[in-house]
Length: 109
Image (cartoon, rainbow, N blue to C red; front, side, top):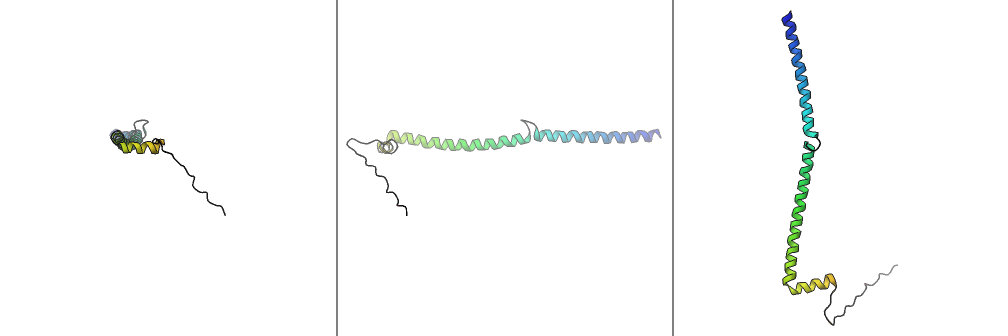
């Protein structure tokens, strides 16, 4: 009788230990997913941010290349320099006159 009681107690102890182990495991999984600043969700957010910054970096690198080519062209090509000076800054040659005409207004019916 005492042996049977001891075996029953051991089974119940094992059940309690399994239950406590399962609870600890569930809390551990929840910690992995939702830990502030370290969890899986934070990791996924950082991964998205890295992808966005990498995309922005490549766009800025291509823009930098375009601007470098533009600078080289401005330094070496006088015709391009004159074109830019006329378009962007409205510069004129000596004895040049600019006439600006307003487009005709549409008549209202």
